[in-house]
Image (tube, rainbow, N blue to C red; front, side, top):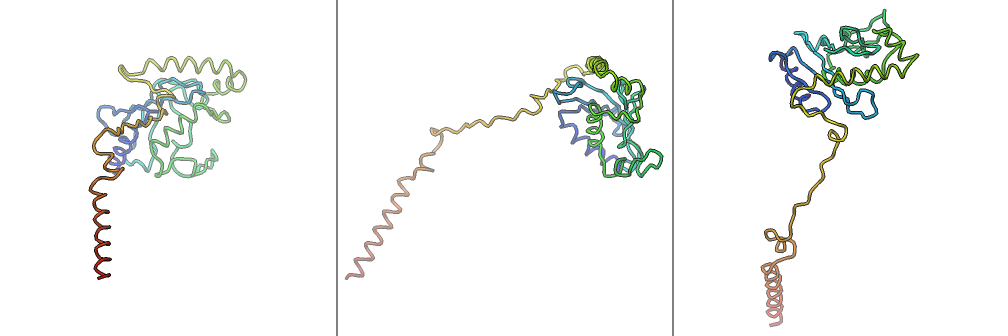
Length: 220
């Protein structure tokens, strides 16, 4: 069951512009997944943040393992690239941390939920219980220095962009295709279709003649 679920999720995510995924050694239980921030107001906009996802054999009953292959300077990211985020924690309530079951992993969650949560976490760090204490302190006390560190990470992440891969932008990702009217009145038999035809006129003329003929017969 896990293989089928993961394959369906993989096919769906492969169509998205905000992530670039691939299988590792053709193994459905191991993915490369790059996160691409499309919000132009984000400090991470333009980065290509490569991560590795490893799925348990009983997925989706247990969460995947997620870690950035190039660790980021962030309050909720450990030096080895792992994340401190509720959605990746085992199902059920945790009395020690105070996390509710609804905040943690559950079988109804999907890979897309994890990736979107991580994207949200990048710009909305939780500093109350940081995985990287120094990053949390810097974000609180010197936000400008923190932004410079993020900028360095963002630029370094571009080294992981695959050759030939076209990075999406906010404009290209959300651009709406313009509808082009290719209809031409000179094409086909438009006038006959919409403006009537000789055969239509003849039909009504014939109907009229028939009514007159019936009237004359009645008078006789």
